[in-house]
Length: 211
Image 1 (tube, rainbow, N blue to C red):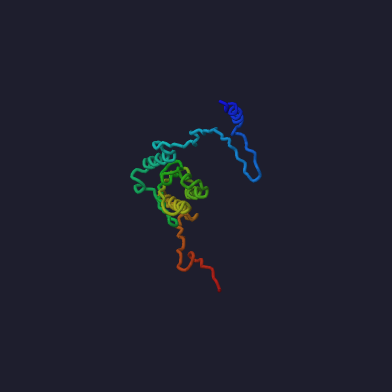
Image 2 (image 1 turned 90 degrees about the vertical axis):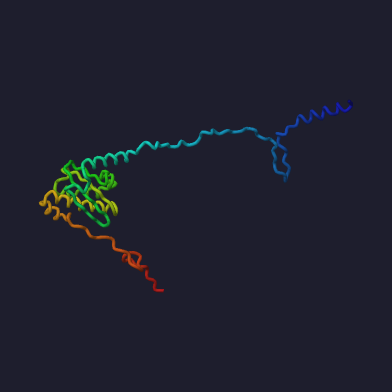
């Protein structure tokens, strides 16, 4: 019982101490803090960016338009391209175009697509395919249906021009003179020259080294 008075001052001195306080820093000893923060930050779980979900049953507008044009062409050309009377075949480089003309309002459909969409809106190509019709003044008198394959769009556009000019000869032989005068009935036979052995291209040789 005699020790209780001595323990009470010791207990009061210990209770006054706080481990959260900073320990005095001595030279050469790094600063240490015994205070531990218990705050926890919780981020929301639904912070994901929204994803675009496209239903598989919905068709794209371009696909619907192509389907409608395909039905339209088949209704206008019973029996297909081979069964028509006003037709012409044009070639340029590796491109081949089969053209059918029908009386209409000037529609131009290439591979079941509108000509402006198929030729990527290129004004030069769009103007080039209509040159034979413009030459004879038929730009709003005939609808043109084309099946083209091979080569690029530039070659196909030039092949379509020759095909349209040849189809106009089936309308009347009197068209030959104005079309021939514009050079629209001439098949351009120029193609890419083949590569030669030992050369980089058809004629380009490796750089000459004297030493």
